[in-house]
Length: 149
Image: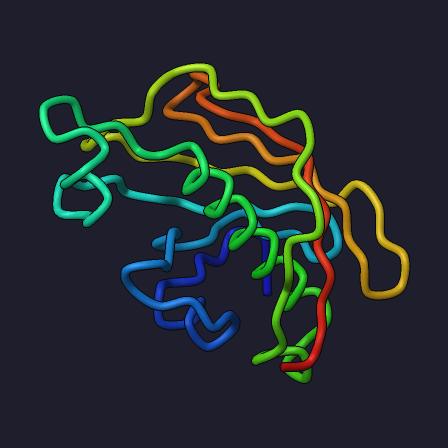
């Protein structure tokens, strides 16, 4: 895969097991195997969490922004390891230094950049940032493990 190729939602669903309503990324771009990727999330009012968070002032829950980072990193790991890794699960192990800077609301397009910071065997550590345009909305460091189902 070249870094200018875009993985659409169908390709993402071949790589990771998440499905609507819990698939948090619409496409992945700028993927550099073993280094980084950018997930894109188009935030719409039709998403089920907005019915209760909050009905008169819809805000995307921070945990779902972190989940979008995790799913983007899972695509990066699977793309790096190759087709034999497709269908494996990438499990969260820890989330550190999570910061939510500004609210994410319907109409926003989140660019979720994940950067691989460290890898030891099947354990990966990432830095994630979610931006709307040039504005940093959220950030976190997190680790994950890849395993067979």
